[in-house]
Image 1 (cartoon, rainbow over the protein chains, first blue to last red):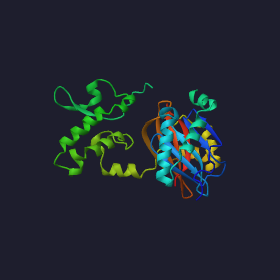
Image 2 (cartoon, chains in turn cyan, green; image 1 turned 45 degrees about the horizontal axis):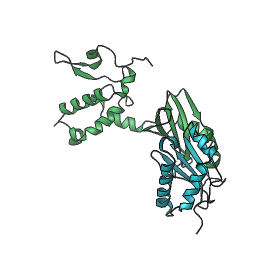
Image 3 (cartoon, rainbow over the protein chains, first blue to last red; image 1 turned 60 degrees about the vertical axis):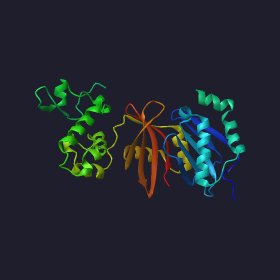
Image 4 (cartoon, rainbow over the protein chains, first blue to last red; image 1 turned 135 degrees about the horizontal axis):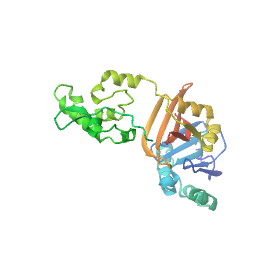
Length: 109
Length: 182
């Protein structure tokens, strides 16, 4: 079975303060499909490539709802949508990534 | 905004028990800002439901009042001037009409929207066109960072629907993200 993510950890993140949008890039590839894993508010979108691997995760409402809510929602919805449970290591790696000084600075600004 | 254009012709009883336009009861025109104040509209809807109880289908009486209340929110879009004018013909015309172009002073596409477009396969032109000439607008009650409401614009391009999520604040549309619906 192919891994659910194109890479075990995000290659990079970007935060857009105007829209309060966080985007985790797992691979720089063309998007084949975008899934609305949570289409209300906050919003969570997942981009997959043509091999159905997750190449990007978008979270709108970072400051409004916080990172912990994002991780919980992502874990729940990925399981519902893809039938795969994220491991503690995967979730932990996202958290570590978002706890870097650069990420914290971007989110705090 | 200091416009005093009446947004809705409401009727209420004056001291003599006569029905008169509510703006005359208040002694001044209803300002546009009061469009958010739904209580006068809902009161009028209730009065209308009471008046027509027993004369209309049960789905239009008190039990179906939520329908009229919902219509009341869109009453100006249906070009009705009072609740009594909200009827099937107006509703059908409203539902069938293309969404009017929102009168935005400006449309701002964030860097994020542009960057996602490169990966997701839409252009800035798509995004602007979707906002300016949408097939459908969903106006949510969610608030964005600026305090404006979140709107979702949809438009069909070559069999695929592009969705733009944007915050509308002070007549400016701030696009937050965009993607193709599956």
